[in-house]
Image 1 (cartoon, rainbow, N blue to C red):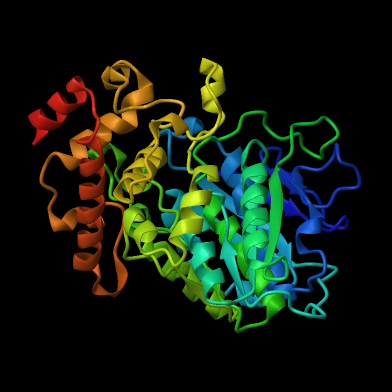
Image 2 (image 1 turned 90 degrees about the vertical axis):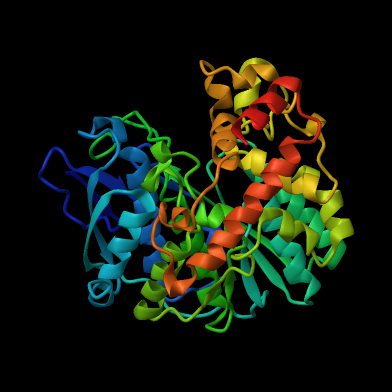
Length: 443
C-alpha cells in the first residue's frame, strides 16, 4: 500500500515509515514543497473551514493519484492508497465513508481516508459582496463553453472555475472567458483558475517525491468539482454548481470489452456525481450539483444552444482534446488532435450542426487511411469506435461502466444509441474509401 501523508501545518510530525510519501501543502521554501498550488484562486473569497477542507482533500487526492504509478501494482492498474491528512473538521469527515467509495469508483483503486485535527483551523466567513449567482465548471472544452453560454443567456452572473497544470489549457480558458465577458459584460463573467499539481522531485523535500507521473489521472474531476464547490460555498448556500457535460460521454459506455470498468473514465458518470453530491450534502455543504445536459448527446447540446450564433463563433477556439500538445512531435499545429476519442465525439457533434471543419484538427481521420493500421496507436480510438458503432449493443451495456442510479438505465441507453448515431452519421460523410469499407464490413 502507498501511504500519502498530507503535511499542512509545520507542526505536523513527519511519518517514520520510509515508504510514506509526504505531500507538503504549505512549505517554507518552494524547493521543499511537494504540492504546487496558486493561493490566488480564492482571492477575495472566504469559504467556510469545511469547504476549505474539501479543497485540501481533493488536492491531496489529485496529487496522490498522479504520484502512485499503476504499472508498479500486480495487475498494473489497481492501487491501494491511504491518505492521512489534518483538517479543521475531522469529526464530520469521519462520518463520510461514501467519499472513499466514490473515489474507488472514480479511479478504480482502493482508497483509505483518515483525518486528524488541524492545529490552526481555517477562518470562516463569506465574501464581502458576492460577484456571481452561480458557478460553472469551465475546462475550455466545447461542452463547458456551451453550458456557460446557456447560463449567461438566463441573465445570471457567472463564475467560471477552471483547473490547469500548464500547456495550452489556461490560455484557451482565458480567451473564451474574455470573449464571453465582451459579449455579456465583465460584471457578469468571472474566471477563477486553480493551478495545482505535484511539485517536481527535489532533495530539499522532507521525502523527495518519485520522479514518474501517472498519466491516467482519473481523480481530476473530484478536484475540479471540489474547487467549484469551494467557490460556491463562499458565495452562499443557494449558489449551484453546474457541471456541463453531455450524457454520452458521462455514461461513457466502454467501446470494447477491454476498456470496461475504470479503464474507461468515469469523470461525470451519474453514479459518481450522485455519490459525491450525497457526500458533500452530508458534510454540510449546501450548494447543489447540477448537469442539465446529463440526458443529451453532444450534438443535441449544440443544437439546443440558447445562443447558437455565438456558440458557432467561439466553438473553434475551444479545446476538447485529450492530448493537445501531442501534434508538435509530428510537427503539426497543437490543439485538437483529431484522433483521440474526445476529438471524434467533438467532430461528430459539430457535423450534426453543420460546423465540422477537418482543417481545424492536426489529423483528419476521415481521409488519413494510416489511422486504420492496426499497428499504429494513433488510430486506436477510431478503430474502437468503429467496433462499437457497427454492431448491435444491448441495453445492459450502459451498465458496463458502473451502476446507473434512479432507475434510468433505459433513458441512458437512449442517450448512448443517439450518440452512436451521431458518430456513424459523421463517419459516413466525407470518409475515405478504406473507411467506408470498414463501416460497410461492420454493419
